[in-house]
Every structure is written in C-alpha cells, then in structure tokens.
Amino acid sequence: MRPPHAALLLLFILAYFRGAYSSVSQSRFTSIISFGDSFADTGNLVMWADPVLPGPQPLKNLPYGETFFGRPTGRATDGRPVLDFIAEALGLPFVPPYLDKGGNFSAGVNFAVVGAPALTLTYLQGQNLTVNPPINSSLHDQLLWFQKLKPSLCKGQGTDCFRSSLFVMGEFGANDYRSFLVSNRTVEQATAYVPQIVDTISQGLEVLIRHGAKYIVVPDIFPLGCVPTVLTKLASPNKVDYYRNGCLKSANRLGRYHNSLLRQRIKLLRHKYPHAKIIAAEYYRPVLAFLDMPGHFGLNSNTTLLTCCGAGGPPYNYDFNSECGWLGVMACADPSQALQWDGFHLTESAYRAVADGWLHGPYADPPIMHVARP
Ligand SMILES: *[C@@H]1O[C@H](CO)[C@@H](O)[C@H](O)[C@H]1NC(C)=O
Ligand SMILES: *[C@@H]1O[C@H](CO)[C@@H](O)[C@H](O)[C@H]1NC(C)=O
Ligand SMILES: *[C@@H]1O[C@H](CO)[C@@H](O)[C@H](O)[C@H]1NC(C)=O
Ligand SMILES: *[C@@H]1O[C@H](CO)[C@@H](O)[C@H](O)[C@H]1NC(C)=O
Ligand SMILES: *[C@@H]1O[C@H](CO)[C@@H](O)[C@H](O)[C@H]1NC(C)=O
Image 1 (spheres, rainbow, N blue to C red):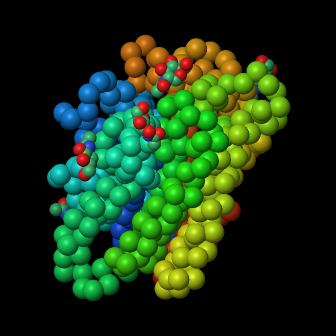
Image 2: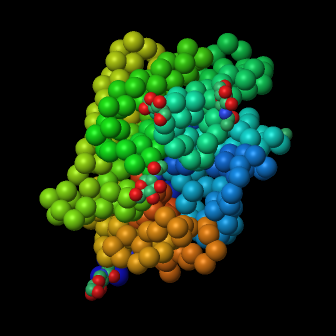
Image 3: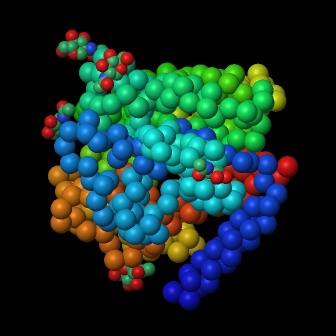
C-alpha cells in the first residue's frame, strides 16, 4: 500500500511546485485581499481575543499549528489553510491578519475571522440563535473594515487600485448553519435561511466590485454532513439517513442547496459585471473525492471520518466537552494522513489538495493560475 501512496504524493508535490515555480515570475497578482471565516483566518480571532473574548482560546494552543509552523498561529488547522497555498503559488507572502496593527498590508490583507457568519450577529441573535463567538465579525463587518482600510491600501495607486489584486470572498455560510445546529434547530429550519445567506454573499460581492475588485474567488461550502461535529450532533440510528461514505444526507442536501444558489448568483453577477472575473471555487466536491479515494490523496482510508485532534474514539473521535486545543486533547500520530483536523476543519494535507484544485483545476472555474497569467 505505502509505496504507491508515496509515489502519488510525490508526483502531486512535484506538480504543485512546478506550478508554483513557473507562475511566480508571470503572475498578474501583487496582492491578495481575503474575507471569510476559520477556513481562511490567519490570526484575526486570536488577536481579537486579547482581551475581549471570555473563556479559553483553544486556537492559541498546540497542537494547532504543529505542522509547518511548529506553533499556534491562529489558523484553525494543523498547518496551512488553502489561502496560504494560494499565496505561495502566486509568490506572495502569507496574507497578514487585519488586526495585526503592525502588519504590512502592501501585498495583501486578511479580514477573515474564525466563526464569522454571513449574516450579522444582531440579526442571528434576533432569531434566538446562539452565535459562537458572539462578536461582530460577519461579512458585513469585514466589508466595513475593508472600506476603512481602502484609502491606505490605495495610497499612490491611481484610480484602478485593485487591478492586480486577487480577492477571495469566503467561504461564508458554514457558520450560519452551524449556529442553527448548536441552537438545536433542525436542518429544515436552517434550509429556510439559505436564500438570505446567499443573497448576503452576493451583495458583498457587488460591494467589492463597486470598490474596484476585478478578480474574485468565491468558494462554496464543504459537505456539512461529512464533518465530525455535525455527524456527532445529528447522529441518527437510521442507516437510511447516511450515504455509503458515512455522510449525513440531510446536512449535505443543505450544503448542495446553498452551493447551487451561490452558483446561480455567480452567473448573474458575471452577466451584470462582465469586466469582473469571478472564479467559482469548490470545497464540496474535493471533500467528497477525499472520502471516495483517500489513498489517491495520501490519506488513510480508515480515518476519514475520525477527528485527528479530538477525543472519544470511533466513530468520529469527537466530544463537545474535549475539543482540540484543550488540555490533554492530543492529535493523531500522523496528521498528514488524516482528513479531519478538529471536528469542523480539515488538515493541512487536505487543504493542500483543495488548493491544488483551485490553482490548476478541476476545483475552480476558471482555475486561478489561468487567470493569473498576465
Ligand atoms: C512591505 O512588504 C513589501 C512587499 O511584500 C515590501 O516591499 C516592503 O518593503 C514592506 N514594507 C515594510 C515597511 O516592511
Ligand atoms: C425569540 O424568543 C423570544 C422569547 O422567547 C420570542 O418572543 C421571539 O418571538 C423569538 N423570536 C424568533 C424570531 O423566534
Ligand atoms: C455588534 O454591533 C451591533 C450593531 O452595531 C451593536 O449594537 C452590538 O452591541 C455589537 N455587539 C458586540 C458584541 O460587539
Ligand atoms: C440543545 O440540546 C442539548 C441536548 O438536549 C442541550 O444539552 C443543550 O443545552 C441545548 N442547547 C440549546 C442552545 O438549547
Ligand atoms: C485499515 O484497517 C485495516 C483493519 O484494521 C487494516 O488491515 C488496514 O491496513 C488499514 N489500512 C490503512 C491504510 O491503514
């Protein structure tokens, strides 16, 4: 089993570096401007947490960050999320968090915050939903930060200030749906909010375009029914509630509905703003591919639904009272072979494979590297 896996992985890594190498000198992009949640945060929440947020801050503890960085950085994974691999491939520095007041934003800025929903805190709490963390970090709030920073980003840049900026909008939505589930609402109740959530994302895209964004990556959401937190929360005794790969049908249906509406909106926006290049990127299909062919991606087929950094043992190794980053909760021996990192987020090795699909295809339309060529 091992040699073919290693060989595939090597080929994959070689392909990745070839892509990165050949592109660096000929990319049109000189900066990345990112919005989103824990799938993109590179340190905003942990900076915010000083001293406003109550309670423990698991993200500030190992084993978060143990791979690659060797220390916790505020990223919600063991190593690098997709955004870091995009930055590397474009020859740009890792995108610095907006809340790093000493940050150098000349090659980009990241507004993404762990836990950020598309809808605002005030709105979600008004629906009697539990929002965790309860802070103003939504898409709307991130756009306000962007507008505040814009004059300094555009200083001395002329009128077409974002002509060589790659915007990444998302993903957004996963935390809105998570707040329904932690508030003990049903998937059906959450489904009623999908059009409103997708509208909010679409309106956010229009704000960016009106501010001069020309190149925007818009990721969809991952299959919610395939992650250990959701599988644990919505566990069912009925086999018919699950697909053969072990994912929950109802939660995946919610994800597919969100993604199909988002795709429709992207089509409309491409029509309305033909000068903008909107790249539709995917988390959904690659996660299913990892579950279908784990060996192909160097992942261990026995652990695809097991939380690497968690507790409680099979089937999901997830316990709401013993989460990653808490005292005594350990990571699995080899995160590079695991898919699920902490119950909601994926491992660096999964993110690397997703990023490769966004950069070179097939998981982005069009692939980022095709657009990056000047
Ligand atoms: C900020 O970063 C840019 C490019 O990444 C670099 O050229 C510049 O020298 C940096 N500025 C400071 C003040 O460090
Ligand atoms: C929220 O809860 C309050 C108090 O129980 C109730 O009056 C209100 O109608 C609820 N709002 C929604 C949107 O469910
Ligand atoms: C969030 O923003 C709203 C509206 O601006 C404000 O009323 C509320 O106090 C803020 N909440 C927190 C936790 O900062
Ligand atoms: C949801 O249900 C669980 C189990 O019944 C309960 O422990 C928890 O307090 C509930 N949470 C909310 C927000 O109602
Ligand atoms: C998966 O588990 C089975 C049974 O324990 C074992 O024989 C097999 O080697 C494992 N596969 C991998 C890829 O570790």
